[in-house]
Length: 271
Ligand SMILES: [Fe+2]
Ligand SMILES: [Fe+2]
Image 1 (cartoon, rainbow, N blue to C red):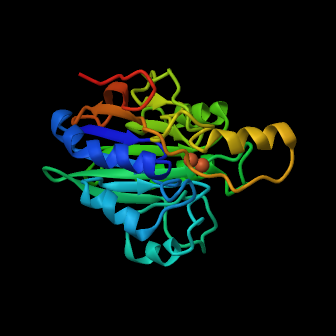
Image 2: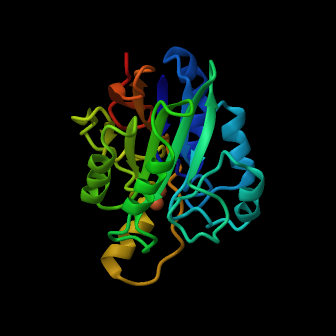
């Protein structure tokens, strides 16, 4: 199966580069399944039902999020209606939505997404490692028709994301990190067959501080005084994604490559 996972979409710059390119990428890369992390899609803070619909109309199959999931309050009731929208699974049980969900892919295949948030330098949630172990006890590759298992591990610390990947190596098709908004150069297949990249990077304007207008962000660090609200940078966006090809016989990875397109980052495109 050919899967593309796009990193955190930040503001209009991120939405534009994703929406302008995703249909063509689906065709040229013969994609079977597309995931987008949408936690910063609405002006850098959260996501709205309207933006979710724009993504789904463009052919995106699933939307993951992260610590900014509920920044736009109108998204809260949307979790009851829209099962393709996920929040980290290790939020409290009473929080709307879920982070483990099964999706249909072409030719009768099924994809499981496990969406978790780490805890180092993040709001503490339930143990993501225990949560991952439980999800993989319930759902196994190539059992009950599951052809691929995708982990979106949303977190700050590289070590924690890497540890998660090694814990599930051989039992997930791919583990990607999100949240740092900076793509890491370590896409590879772990010894057990799981594809991994510590962070996909963002879909947004890189002439910025992690997607936000640089002047306001720099001033915050320099003066340590209250500043204007951070705003999403609005220059040309770069689409950052991880492309994975899995073996339909095992569900494990055959190939993993970063994809970068548009904006000011050097481009790279899987063959
Ligand atoms: Fe983010
Ligand atoms: Fe985040």
